[in-house]
Image 1 (cartoon, rainbow, N blue to C red):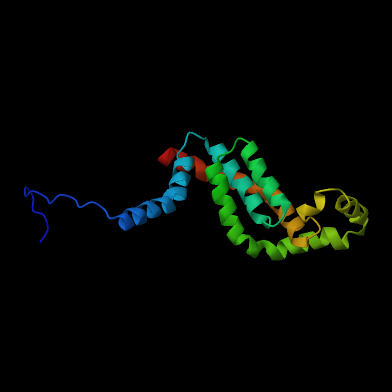
Image 2 (image 1 turned 180 degrees about the horizontal axis):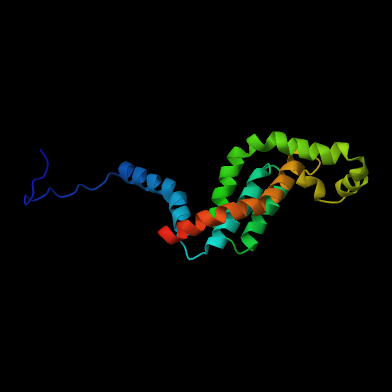
Length: 171
């Protein structure tokens, strides 16, 4: 059997190099999760948590090949929101973004193709330096950026009571 109460325990055997490496690697794989939990349990207010989640949702919806998504990530670091909530939302909505693609495509198509009055604006933007790297001329990219911008405030308002309850319970 096992160790009985009061019986001396055997000395712990030192870990082999391979076991030690595997142990360190498994701990390193858990670091992002640990940072997320620490970030959510930090001193940020429920407003900062909800703001981070809402802005992270907006960035997460934009396809990651676009310069717009990188600009969004930079902006996340520049505003005073909870980065753990923001990056968790970016990851979540990046996975879910394909569910929003039909709506994004419809919105982008409406503006890029059907709204003939906007054609000179799109042409002017496309001829500017760097702007084409945003891929705004892709219906899904433009639609996702606008959909994320339109949903950011409702997501903030809907998530704020959840984060307030979270802060009361865990914070």
